Length: 622
Image (cartoon, rainbow, N blue to C red):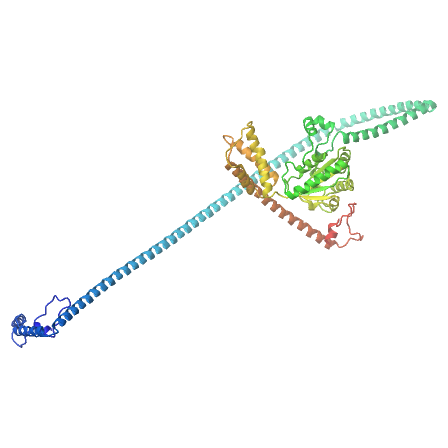
């Protein structure tokens, strides 16, 4: 329909409908270009009346046509459809632009996140690198400090060694000069004395001759006088039979009196020593004696007031061990009551686990006297050890109430007789001990205590009826011990108010449980000393108040000291094991070199020790 309005078919309307078609250029050739362009412009804006006429004619025909209205509506619909498509494209374009913006924002955020991650990673790596540098710098400083300390220590040691060498050289020089001076002085004195003697030799010889002559005359006169007197007396005595009989009777009575007095004196001395005194080997005893009462009256009066009590009162041990010891206490008490034969007991285990304490309480519980001796006192006695052992057992056998003889550190003199460390005197003392303990006794009960029972002689083990091991306290036992000693050394003195001791407010039960966990491996004696350390810490404070932190600090120090002792003990055991191995190899090599003994008896020593096997270590190793 565009031709109806004067438009050509080759001219298209713009999409927005706002632009007009450019007029076609006028046809023609030649002439001036300016004129041509002017004419073409005029021709473009010249009104075409024929076209208008044709349009009017077409409009009339259209109005006259039956489909004019439908055609108009169709054109409107086409135009609306084009507008909608255009708007849809615009919206699609806008949506596409928004999506591009969102994608761009997402990409920006992702880039920022990656950038932050990378910065964080770089920061961490930088921090780690700086930390490594600081650690390495600190280690280098420590190494330099250690080198400087070692160098200073080396210089100090060299200085001390030089000073010691100079001191030794000075002392040696002084001794040498003093010796030379003494030698010169002595030489001068001897020369002077020799010179004087040479000058006075004739005078001395003359004096010696005169003295010898006078002595000879005096001796001869004395002999003559004594011979004449004795001869006259003997002649008168031999001619008078009454004098002879009286002299013989007097000599006989004198000899009888001398020997009788000597025997009576020995018997009385043994009786007094057995009844009134105590042997020198006994360190402590509850047995009543007049001499001990005179020496220690207050202690003996306190002992008389002691009443039989529970054998395990105040002793904290493992439940199974307590049950076994209670059975031993009941059996010992009934043995004492029924006058039966006592059993010998060995108590072994680490030091400070309550062996001596239980032995004393066992004697008091059974109504017996106790006596404590240590094995270390026997070895220094030498030859007197045999006599001292017999005195101890004679004294123990004279007890009317029964005696519990407790030997602490018994392995000091009851070790194997085949050992090289035991001498002849100690071996004889051990034989005396084995002789006196060969049979069961109703007078005394033997209780041995040792930390190393494997060193006992085989015959000593044969004398033992029961062996009880005292181990280190466990967690529950340590809790009971800590509570016991905390109450004894801290709470009771604090409640009395007589001492400069107070306790801060904190949970005592929780503290005791914590302390029990910190004292793993410690013995009862060490925990008791820890209680004394708490008390001393309160006394050392300014206000005399014991705080929780003070208790923890003292416990930590005690735990460190205990660990140090354990380390020392392990090192000592290693050295002893190496020494034992060395001596064993040495003995084996000696046996291999010597070969079997010529007499065919094995070379072992047989001293009546209940047939102890392997008395000769060389034969046993062979």
